[in-house]
Amino acid sequence: MKYQHLFFDLDHTLWDFEANSRQTLEELFQSLQLESRGIHDFDLFHKNYLVHNDKLWDRYRNGFIKVDELRWKRMWLTLLDFKIADEPLAREMGILFLDLLPTRKLLFPYTFEILNYLTEKKYQLHLITNGFEKTQHSKLKYSGLDKYFREVITSEGSNSLKPHKEIFDYAFQKTGARPKESIMIGDTIEVDILGAVNAGIDQVHVNHLTKEPVLVNNVLPTYTVFSLKELENIFL
Image 1 (cartoon, rainbow, N blue to C red):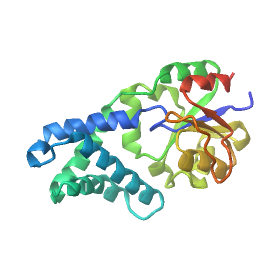
Image 2 (tube, rainbow, N blue to C red; image 1 turned 30 degrees about the vertical axis):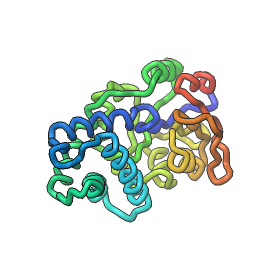
Image 3 (cartoon, rainbow, N blue to C red; image 1 turned 60 degrees about the vertical axis):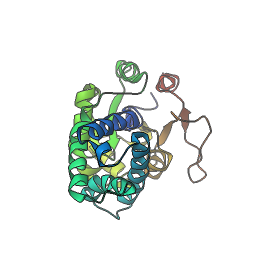
Image 4 (cartoon, helix red, strand yellow; image 1 turned 180 degrees about the vertical axis):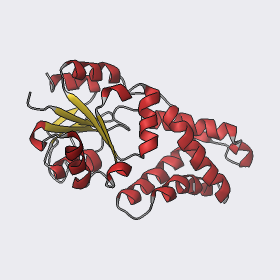
């Protein structure tokens, strides 16, 4: 086999972060009675949350903010959009969100099937994720994915973040994998694919959303698939 070590991303690649986070926010919206606080449109609340979450994650990846600030400020900024300046509520929401989110189980279609297929083919499967240690391990446990992965490398555990090369170096050291026999499988061009390029390994862009080829600094991903099932065509 050309590749022996397959490094998967978790969120947005296997574990449906958008669906799971929406489900969790909707539960908080109901339990904390946010409608009575003046937030009458959950869809708008969710949409605004996603915008703030993406911006704060980008700042976190680039070292401008710390983990704790990310966790509660995404709630704080969303509440401010609705003129609710309640920091204790934002902090409570941040805690409850991270308690509930990892218990969700929604995965992308064909997740279990492809992991079973790759396991039977004797590939060594690992995860490289920018998530938090406790949160990501909980997601794997509750969704039933934990049994498939030999090593789980998180940004918190490695003290680095994709797309930086250091998190991949840490992964190679922990797994014993060599770059030439490794490949990264992920959904995000700027994080997973560019990170793999920086680390000198091949990449699979799992393009769940569109069917347009995307360049990374003028480098086309080694492979692009539009569903997890298509990985069978690469890993024979």
